[in-house]
Amino acid sequence: MNKASFSFVVRKRNAAGAFQINTGPLWGGADGRVGLRVERVENLYEFTKAPCEVAIYEVDGRGRSWNRETEIARFGVKIRRAGTKFHFTVNSRKDTPTYENRLPAPTEDWEHWYQEPWKVKRIFRGPWLVTPVSFTTRYHNGWKPDWQPPHFFLDFNTAGNSFDKLTTVVIPRSCTQETVKRRRGVTDHFYTIGFKVFVGSQLKFRSTVLLVDCHNILAHNLQLAARGMLMAHDELIYSNAGLTIVTPGHRPPDATLLYGSGFRPLPDKTGTHYGSYWVRDGFVNHFGKKKYGKPQSDFVYRHAESKKLQYLSCMEYPLQVGQIAFAKTFGAPAHKRGGRPNNAMWRSYRAGLPKTDASFVTIVKRLVDAGWISVYFNPDTKHPHSTDRRDQVFHKRTAKQARRKRLYQGVRVHDRMIDFDINTSHPRTLQPAHRARLTEQQRQIKKVEFGFIITADARHGHCAMLIKGKVYEVHYDRGPDDCSVFDASRDFEDWAWGSGLFVVPRGQWPVP
Image (cartoon, rainbow, N blue to C red; front, side, top):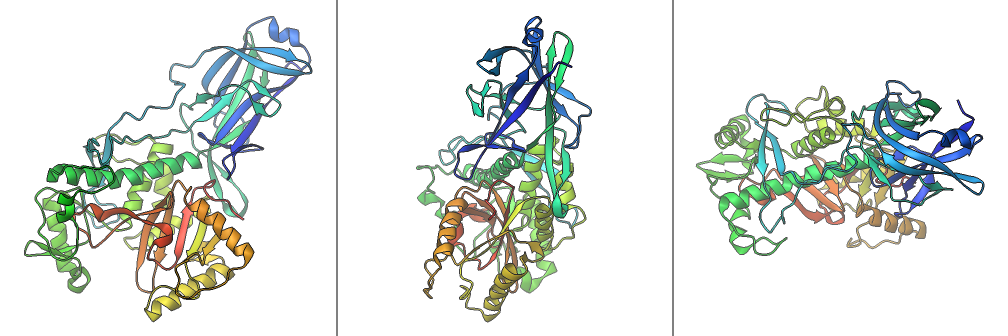
């Protein structure tokens, strides 16, 4: 080969939002940029006597070597000298037929996936069903899902460490998922790319491989799935009830019949999901499920079946969000009725789980083992909010375990966000370092694209999701006629639970 060398230049967005040079891996999506740089050329004439091309490949290299390459883009280029530096000038593009140099436009309607609850008594029950939802009300303002496939931004004209030209989007064709083992058994998930430089038909240079990390793209798609399920349920209730949304973001006065507590009849037309109610004489009462046990639960199942509704728990909302978003990011879902949006990665996280509320704790542990970042939270470690003595002891104990053992319900803790309740009835003095760290965390919590939450008190467990400082959850005490079965009305810092853990994809939280 010619005595020339070329290299990748990786820039990643830091916590402050600015791009900085990084040695890798590259963040997939808008938070990462990669440039191709000419390091040196000893025989410039050889690169100018015939057409010069740069081909970009997806490589099945397990992050270490170059194997089973798949070409995803090819560019006609010239190499020019600028003083002592050499640069690419791109003249043409020769993409492979399956390649698109753009991100898919968010034009599709939302496909609201859910599963029938009455087939098999498991976390996931029966085949997947799908209800197409067009967001036509002013309340949701014609929302469309902007799914992000694995992609990266590529630039050729890299002067020093700066990217002078607009970048071009590259979407791998097969998005072959790879795993790389790190310290402490952590497994990272990437796809791997490389490039070759040709003069005429002769190969003159082959790069080393570069890992592209898609965790931030996954966070975006998880957010879309969580928001989409919440809004689809709202949309179906509004359309079935014939309500008119007057002001975006505000529920109209005639929707008050859908809210409140106590007894109310089940309507004939509702949303797709059904809270964990029990039913008597056509009315709903959420206090009877535990009191009356299996007979009332079976009664709920029969009512849900008659209305084709998903019998919902707090755990199944994040489970379905994970199922859909992981498939959109790393797998190809079966887009047909009875199909199942699925992929190998999410199946591995929920494999072998029993039907218990502890199941999602197991998934969270597996996510942390796979490289996600975990943050223990407790608004007041000395005076927990609950008036129940058992809850107070429980929350104090979790704070002690998170501090001393760096564990929460058996899940490793990377960071702690504690004593952030400014409305406590027990004023306390925070150390300047703690106050500064807390200010930074409160700022960061508003930036988090997505996180799973597990929390508990002395008797109950709960699952939820964190998106841009808001808690997305479902309520067991709401029915299918209630838009707040799916709820995102609470800020994280005002949430009622006394302690817990949220886990976010790597890159969503700065680890101290």
